[in-house]
Length: 293
Image (cartoon, rainbow, N blue to C red; front, side, top):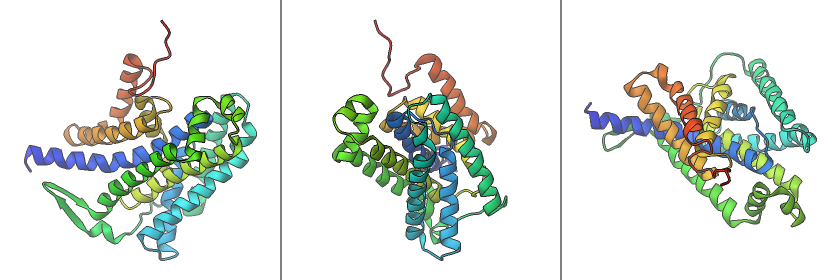
């Protein structure tokens, strides 16, 4: 394969992985910017989305689209439950309380998945996985093309939600100044519920989509949440648009590093970029500096 064709193939593979990163990171950014909660169990939402998709397909015999909808609905409801039972009682306390609680939830979900589904990896069986798609010199499966296309549509819908609806304006108001938002009549509890539902649904969708590409297992979320925080640091805290761009960029960079240097260096690339970003531009690519002259 010629070098230009090889590069195009690596870029396409990176877009597929980056699409999952941007969905997970966008959801986590919403929670951090709106509620100031650093949810380290967010990766387990991704893992549960994968298991929900596998269960819907194998147990209920659903086709791909209903399977994805089932996973999104399950994780949205689970996000509501987590906000109501775990994080809402911690409102007003020190941030360390929610961080510790999220670590505990992460361990609980990992071990719960191990007991419920076992340690054997699973995968979503989709007819699209065997459909070849050629775009110029790039070869992909229908499943991978669907991941990129659907992720793009969902991100567009998220931006329309944030910009064009009252709920979106309430979320942005909470992110900018919670006290003023409450004085203006924003229902803080409703905003928190919506934020967690949307955040968990995005992670669940990413997990469901990628379950047809990578194997699903209880430990999937641990590395994914680290990738999500990597994206957020690169983009800048609180920037959903930045998380989308940085997520795609990280996926492409990892694909290039894996292809040209070696798969063993793939995960190290993102963490190296984080260190470099913290040294050169601590506020991230799209964040605003807090320094005063």
